[in-house]
Every structure is written in C-alpha cells, then in structure tokens.
Image 1 (cartoon, rainbow, N blue to C red):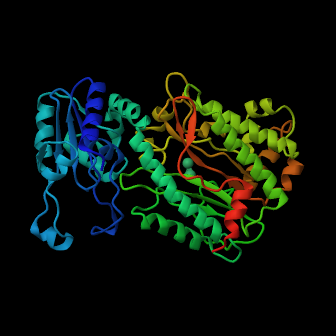
Image 2: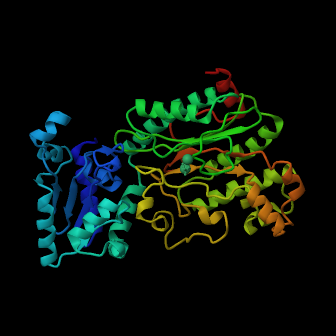
Image 3: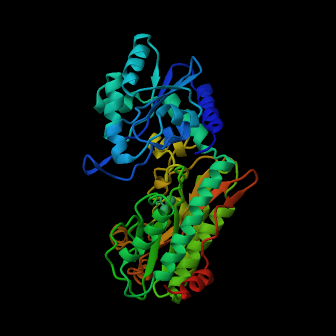
Length: 464
Ligand code: GLY
Ligand code: MN
Ligand code: MN
C-alpha cells in the first residue's frame, strides 16, 4: 500500500473534479469459482484500489464531495471467521492506513445512501462490470439492473480517467516492478521453446513465476505456435521446428499494477531467413512506433507509423505493392496487422477499459476510425507526460482472412496474393513493450527483455 497521504490526495483531487453529491465506490467481493466458498483469487476493483487502497473484499468507499468527508463501510470479522482465517485487522485500522477516519458496518451503507436519496443528493458511481456489484448498486439506489449503465456518472467517468491516465513516479515504479517480473517469465519461456515441449508447460512455468512473486498473471496468458490467432488461449500444441511461438503475458504487483509484454521466438532457438525477414519488419514497426511516442502526438499517428513500417517492409519482400502511404490510408495493411498499436496500461491491463474504451482512448479532438484494423485501436488521443501505454505491432497470416479478401478481390492494387500464399502457414509475430510518455519523449519500462534477433537467439541458446 502507498502512504495514506497519497490516497487522501487522490480523493481530494477527485472531489475537485465533481461538482456536488457523493461518490460511491463499491469494492469487489470474493467471486465464486464452482461453489460459494471456493473462490477465484481475490482481485480488488481498480477504482476502489486507486482511491481507497485496501485489498480486502466487501468494503465500500464514499467520498462526500460537499462536506469534505470520506467513509469506509465494511464489517469486522467475528470469532467464527477468525477460527478459519486467523486474526484479522479491524476495519477502523485498515481505514486509517488509507487516511480515512470514518468507518461503519456495511449494513450502514444502506442507511447512508437512503439519507442521501431523501436529501436529493446526487450519487455518482462508475460503470459496474460484475453482476454482484450491479446488484449491490441497484439495490442501494433502487434502479433496474438492466438499465444500470444509463445511471453511471459521466462526470465521474471523465474525472477518474483524467486522474488515472497520468501515472505518478510511484505508479511507474510499480509498473516497472511488474515488467521486471515479466523479464523472468519471458526469458524462462524463451529458454523452454524447443521442439517436443507442450505449450501448456511453458504457460505453467511463466504463470508460476508470476504467482511466486505474489500475484496471478494480469490476464490469461496468450501463448501459441498459432500466433495468427490474436488472443489464442488454446495451449495444447506440441512445439515443432519451423513455427514461431507468440508469448503474450504479464503480472500484477501487490498494489495491482500490471505489465503486458509480448515476445515471439522461433521454436528451436534459431530464426530461419523467412522468419527473420518478417520478424525484423515487426521489430522496426515497434521501434519506429516507440520513437514517434512523445507528448502532443496523437497515438493514432504512432499507430500509422507502425502500419507504414509494416507495409513498407512487406513491399520490400514482395507481399505488398504500390504506394505505401496510399496502401495504409486505404487500409490494405490490415490484412497483416488487423489490430491497434496499443492501449493504456496501469491498474488494469487495458487500463480503465471498464469505464468505456471510447472515453479512455478518444476525446473531442479525435474519434475512433471506422476502417477495419485501425478501428480496433484502443488509444488514439494526444499523448501526455505520465501516460503509460503499450506498443504492440504484429504481422499475422490469417488464412481465413486471406481467402476472404482474395475472393473479394480486395486491395488488389496493394496486395500480391500469389506471394502472400507462400506465407499462408507462417503463423504470426507480435512484439509488445510497456512505454512511459515522458516530458520530452518516452521511456521503455523495466529491465529490457530480449527483443532483437541476436538477443533472442543468445537467450534461447541457454536451453532449459
Ligand atoms: N494482452 C492483451 C493485449 O496485449 O492487449
Ligand atoms: Mn499483451
Ligand atoms: Mn497489450
């Protein structure tokens, strides 16, 4: 946990951005796995965690905007619980750790909210993403659960995004801790990527490193020799020479800050010429996109830099043709790069996505593209110092998409379908780093994870 002053300052900053009323932050409860007492690993709600810090289930926080008072509602444990769980801190002591002096039992929250409603005070809350939270909010406020999204507070959404988008040095340090753990996960995964191994063994080893550092992975690991499937959670394949292995993973720190890294390596530890040629294009897209990352630049422009690097590289190899800028403007590159360059990263892997991606990644100045590929870009707006984002270009050969576009004779002026056929079974390559936007540019976060062909081959030579 950070110092109490940090949480107090965050709540005060939020108070200044909301005109009046109270702000309700329901913390998460335990989530049942297969029966009520057998639960998933507990994950606190990121907004609650940001403003109220506590990593315990069944708490709720209130910020009273008009009266400069904060409250934590939560129950103390009884002896029946303590027998099973051991001694537990009192709610009042937990609240003190995050600078909150006023505490009450959870049942008092109903009374408190009823009073607010009676006094016609606005109750602001953020969109809910769990059924339990939806029911809790709707029960407290007497609204129809099917219409809860109509009632989420837009001023609150905008204020939270404004605050959480700018990471403090302490937050950046947390994210770097998560990247440093990812370094260990990825170098281990690389050293295991030899023929005969099952993908699931590598997933297990990488996930184990995350858990050994204290927390589960920050999202289900994507790891596959069928990397052309962008989010492939099927890990049953046996590794074969000639395939590229995409590994996309991250961990969380004790304070719930995430890393999100991707590396792609040749099974067996040596790139073939064909693999190296495609890999170098993706690497250049990653590096050029990073080089373009600085305050004031639209992240969509960094995306376009990466897209043009990909189109230019594929033109050199004969897979694309014609004018590179025109090809990218038309969207032809999206056959190979059908997703966005990246997204915000923080307490959520897709940071604040639960508040609505459109509000996190776009604003009055820039709206999402409607073009296939670029439409998936989660962050398009102007960059500011303190943003942390991912840079994750890729080249994929998706047979179903190639066949569809070819049958539709799509972009025949930019795509050389006969040449593309030679890569039909190639798979995919993605490279992803976590980047801080600094006052005058950017910084790639964490201990550098092997990324060049030479670095990857050297790391893999130390086979596990
Ligand atoms: N891990 C999913 C992503 O890279 O966005
Ligand atoms: Mn990722
Ligand atoms: Mn990502």
